[in-house]
Length: 341
Length: 286
Image (cartoon, rainbow over all chains, first blue to last red):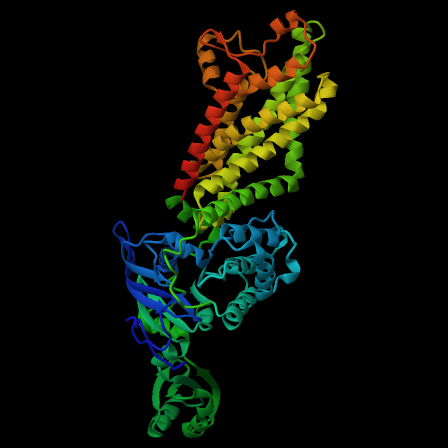
């Protein structure tokens, strides 16, 4: 696959990756005066892990709800697997997998019973059900819990079972709304292992939302969304490259001398609290040369490579953590949003 | 998985579609049964209340009312207590949708590409089956009360319980689809269930009630479900004419004594109405 950098959110309907599995054009959703989603367009291609990254309230969940036929756009078009979502919602729903922020399992049933229930509602041919249950449980590494009650599952296991369940009817796209919210880092890593394995082994297209920067790194492409608009869309590598060079901070015996010496040596430098900041291509490899060029004893070195946090900061002018609304537990939030419906 | 666009006209046969909907209904029904079977404590607590009523009211009132030709108040109450057990379980089962919503599973059902009617019917059928089973467990008490059972009578009772349970579960589903929160559930149980039971003739004869209460009795669907149950039970007992007079089992409407068939028709009409309302309520949910 050739590396095609889609710099803008301008969609390219036909390129090397073929027809998009999800195509969104000028999507808008307003709630009264408030515009939650403000004219976004993008494509998701087959086999891709596509992440929607943004702070709470940026419009992620509203967008995913519209893609999944669960909310109606105020304006704009969405097609999933070539089908207009507004015109054939039921057909679309048969071919997408959904995992919500809140758990939707019956915990009095076993893992297998939950999967079987789903299989019937999603019209999986009866003859195939058993084999598919075995397969999806294997994909999320829960084969040995097949006959266990869901009430005995940990939060992470339940979430993985939900991902497995969403795969029962072999969806064209798997939608995951904040799949790792409320889970500990270890479990989050496990979920990501699952997601990436799905892409490798089952070639599943995944669309997910997250507000964890470190998680978005796993995605093939990221759309950064803020205030209902896509402000950047590209691969994590390209996005980070837009930030530019690595930085090396040097603490020295005499920072003024060091700064002048480094500048004379041709480096781009800047004085920062406690030392000198140098902008270089490859920070780690540049360290020995920088120590040499500083001309004074170096006490400490800190190399920083651009992260998605920097990307977010650059595009929005603030850090994603600051921009969160008051962090509410998922359950409470669900109750609030539910009341509105 | 191919990237070929889906065909909106991917028209499957009507028969296939119907069979798929039927399977959905059966699956929802099965889930109710599995959950019932797994919650033994609920089965037990569902028995305690009717038994308590039977003992406290039955024995207490028996002393006051006395017995006529060997027939006493406990025997009068017995069919009513069975009905009470069925009705409580049925409404509770129908309203378990409130729980499904609270714990998220309702969402799994609602977003599925399936007809809401199939879901509502499955929920109703499941709840009704569970309620009939729960009510039938009460039959174990019959020998203690001195109520004589025959095989035919047991079948008749189960049939009547099912009809009653279908009507009341559908009613519970309908109510639940209009309740957003758990608190509403309690309110409904207090405000609807208990008055319905008390004004159905389940616990005491209704022929001496003042007029305005009589109106409530006659618009209460339960009235027409309790009476047939009592009639079939009484028909299998040895009762003197005096006992029959003292312990009436029939319902009068506009001066006419309703026949068992009429009563069943009325319950069937209520059941149909409630099922329609339940389907409508379910279709509009979320």
